Length: 143
Length: 143
DNA sequence: GAGGCGAATGTTATAATATCACGCCTCTAG
DNA sequence: CTAGAGGCGTGATATTATAACATTCGCCTC
Ligand SMILES: [Zn+2]
Ligand SMILES: [Zn+2]
Ligand SMILES: [Zn+2]
Ligand SMILES: [Zn+2]
Image (cartoon, rainbow over all chains, first blue to last red; front, top):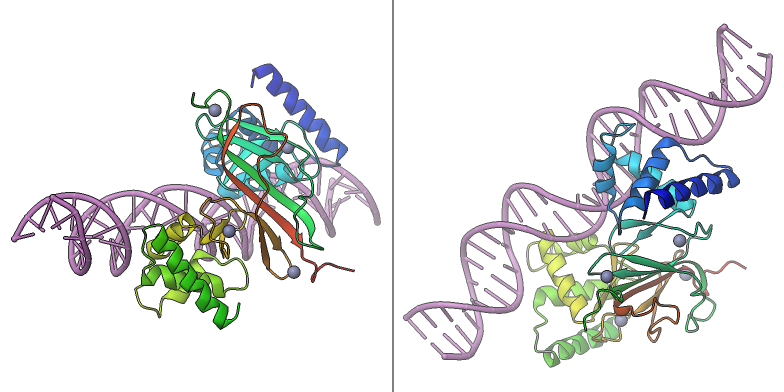
């Protein structure tokens, strides 16, 4: 992500929060910035390290609280299978997303629109779905 | 799961392993038994507790090694979003499964046959998919 | 301005999850 | 026999996440 598009993404995130009646505080903004800067899924304790020289102190609750906020706001998604986090460029309020993660280069592509599976058990009401695909992206795919 | 069907499942698991040229050792069998007995996703350290009075000692590597084996054999799946494990009644050799987990009663339904999503990025080669749906099953669904 | 309230954050400690590293035992191929 | 591989025991440690409580700050009211 270029510095320019990062700035724009942060501005858009700020607007998104204001519309939801919430505040993108400095700590939250800094965490979002770090997640967006990363070129792939990023670990909570790596964020913690990156935060240390920064504005606030850096204890685990700081980063986990910021991540919780950003996930609720739809600005960050957790990759459950990696215990890691990725930035979201769509800012969708519903939590669901479909992730395609390249195991080779770490790139993450996000897609929407994988709704209720056709083979769900009868009467099952889905509230939250975790959909993560791991493999090789077009660039890293072996010949 | 009834005691009878549990016995049958363990016998089937043993056969499945033999066909793969692997051994369902006592520790592995005991862990599988515990996972199958549970009425929902079960945590590694709960297995550890349950193993303590059992045959071997009970340190984390014991249960994690057994779980790794059982997952590779397709006898157990990990619920990534819960850091928990569920028994598999299908014994499919490929790792993929689609799970429907009731947040109220903890029941888990497993389905197969949700292959390559239509909206994958061009050229992306999927190796492993994690698909977990959380919500309410038909019994627990509010009126 | 003083006081009170709530959200956000700081701080300390601990819980929960998972792996490493090493050595012993057993089985078996050669 | 002997060497190697797989399986497991054991102690230590790494990684991930939360609980509990104190403090700060902005805002509203009196
Ligand atoms: Zn998203
Ligand atoms: Zn790639
Ligand atoms: Zn299965
Ligand atoms: Zn239910």
